[in-house]
Length: 416
Image (cartoon, rainbow, N blue to C red; front, side, top):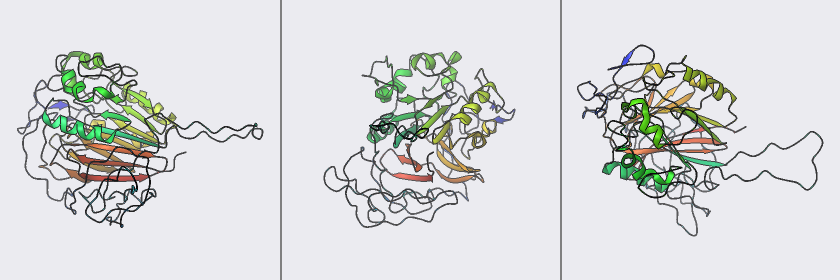
């Protein structure tokens, strides 16, 4: 057991017996089936394919697929250029000729809802490659100028949690992430099992994701010309004194334990939820006081906050209530965490929260009932999240390593 920032207690990386070994724990026992009353995996099933790399071809799709009714917080996603494939199946768009666009993702989070397809291709290239603002030959009317366009019109972000264990499952999830060709990768903690050591960090991280890491000095190949890998620390990373192997390995902004990154369309805030954080991890801590004004000042369309210990979870570890900061009131559009090795989506006030700890390091089966905030949960296969932000909506999807879309939520928003 460990003390949560608000003074309560919550198990951190407890095994099936509920105990925690800070140096080697983190793998829950094989629990029972999902709690009664849960919503996980009760809807229809389908076999979908891994999302194809972004393409630039357009065309017409197949016949329309069907989608389940919307949830209370989602509406129809933005129009696409084609129609969905036949219900219950999908085919990746051809690389030449017609390339039908995807049917809207299921808005209820039901596993494998009919008509779900691979995410739409981005309308721009790599992150930060923005169309330049329009220019004119002559000066405009005095005192009036057109606002500049967003930095990008589409941004794709992969999110992985509890992944750094150098096992077959990590390779499978890494292959899925690479197939998406994401602009950025974020991590939800536990990057370096079991004890955050310098001797294991490159094999646990660089071996699988070196091509996203800027200033990469490891032994597994070339790094990225610019950093596109944005981790947050977990309790296994903090087993090493002062988090030193982690801060030595990465080149990150601010103090490297918590920081933010403005991508134009999306603003990322990587926080440190661990009890060892020198600046605290409560809603009144120095860390929180750093975050609040940055959220308030953000001009991005979507502000995404992420960290390791989940504020809400019905999994093995449960909720870390000390992390229930007023994120929505401060300006966040979504909150993502790891720690419990399962996937769970919540609706908290007007924004979604996610627990995503299926990056490679084992699976915790649900043995508790879902929380009142729970919208969907899943505990069968490893996988990762794909977040696709556009100027009209943001979509959160969870895909298994073998290319099945398990959950999808689209939140419409008109970017300012």
